[in-house]
Structures are given as structure tokens and as C-alpha cells.
Length: 127
Image (cartoon, rainbow, N blue to C red; front, side, top):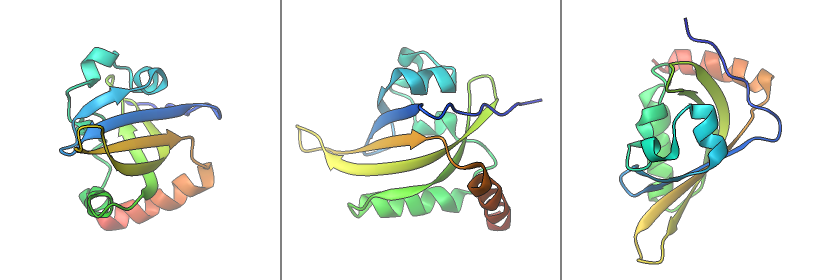
């Protein structure tokens, strides 16, 4: 049975992906919460932490938003390497790296508990 990992108030998870969603960077806090070593994450699709409870339409909206050059924000349930889960409030920023390639940086923090309960209901309706 999986268990919820509740983030500490001061935890700030950061990852960076290329234009196809492959991880190019993950900070230490992200690695620790997701239960992966840095080397296990880099080069993997960011889907490695996607929880099956997340509706595909939520990610469709995310990608449509950032590919237009806009910032996306939302609540995401992720899974860990050990199949536990954690909720985050994510902000995804599109940008071009030094080589002129499209990249995305995602910054995630602990969400408010009340918002998680609201989002769970919304996501159930999206399936």
C-alpha cells in the first residue's frame, strides 16, 4: 500500500527538462522526495514521477500552455520510486537555453491541504 509523503514547508523541488520532457537537471530536494539518485533521473522522461491518478488532460493543458511560451501553474500528484506519492503546487517556466533550444524549468512546493482535497475531486471528474 502506498503512503503519502507530505513535503516540509521549506522544501523547493526543481527540475529542468528539454523540449521533449526529458530531465536535464534535478535538485537534491527533488531527488530526495522522489527517492531517486540524480543519475537515475537525468535522461529520463519526467513521466517517471507521473502518478496514475493524474488525468492526462491536466498534462495536455500544461504542455499546450508552456509550448506557447506561457507559464503554467497547477497541482500535481507525483509518485516516488518506491510507489509512494506526494502532492506539489508546480510552476513550469518555458525558456531558451544558451544553445537556443526550448527548455522548461519546474519549481514545486508544498500545496495547501484544503486545495489538495478540492483538486482530488476535480481530477476524479476529469477521468
